Amino acid sequence: MKEFTFLMPCLNEERSLGFCIDEIKETIERLGLDAEILIADNGSTDSSVEIARSKGARVAHIKDKGYGAALLGGINAANGRYIIMADADGSYDFSHPELFIESLRDGYSLVVGNRFKGGIEKGAMPFSHRIGVPFLSTLARWRFHAPIGDFHCGLRAFDTAYARKLNLACPGMEFATEIIAAFAADGARIREVPTVLRKDLRKGKPHLRTIRDGFRHLYYICFKKTL
Image 1 (cartoon, one colour):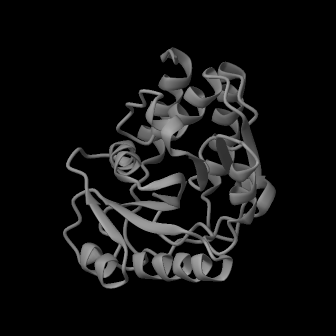
Image 2: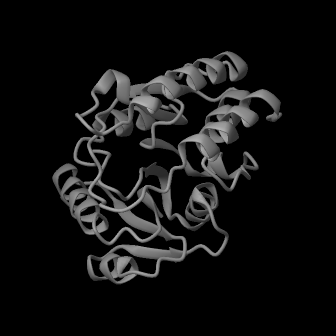
């Protein structure tokens, strides 16, 4: 078993995946981490899988579609005691995970980034998200009693075994809310740390659908029961 798994869900990320893997590899070497890089591929039809393998990452092929489904498959396939996860689009900074690592080693079971505290590069977040994310996060924080101000930050870290026992099931983007809610309901130690959001490296259409996925988060917050 490794101490860390750096996990990225992937669906046709050939423009950015190599950059992310290289950044993680440099971090692993610089910090001397016992770690693996795991790509949870969700059916890519471009060269993402070939890029991942050529750079030494392990690939788990996840058949069930969706952001949450890919991450659930990745969590089950991980060999690390802890998972550090983020998107494969280059928007999250893998070069400075020290606060996440220190928090895990200090006994926190879930560590979530906060982009509003760490900084958002120009053009990295649409105006609608700058309004919607704080709104949904406020509702979720009240509903699930979790000390998190940015429920939709994609950079987060957690205890692998703990996550596996929580019966996580959301296949879509609302998984981001579900995992925080489940850890909080179980009484886990949760910490939030600042992180930077960069403009992503992709040129195509983003996987996130603002209205659809926003309503899925809202539905989960209002109607779903946790543990």
